[in-house]
Length: 132
Image (cartoon, rainbow, N blue to C red):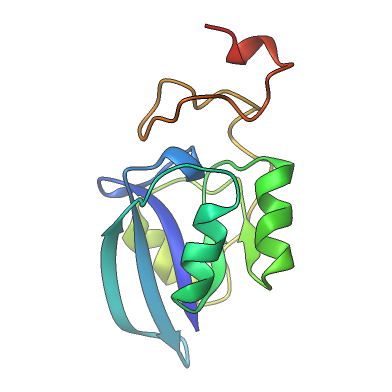
């Protein structure tokens, strides 16, 4: 099973869409078979879920994600685990042992603006966090 983790250095990135890269992990029988890091292809509504789906990803692990993004992933059969923080290797171990727990999203709408991968406009134009 393939898992994608929003990544910033050695840690889970708080903002899934604007993380610098994703760590893609193949887990089989609770063991890591393959692990690779790929650059974030860009932040555009619906693009990253399709991109990761084409790579065979079944789970996305991140610190934070909005409801709209979660919906895009669910439509493609990818389960989102949000509210995760810590070192990537520790998160992979917990996921492999089926002990990884998610929680509340660590970011709010527009909170990633100015963080990591940029885009030209905010997905939440009615939120004051998105104002320039």
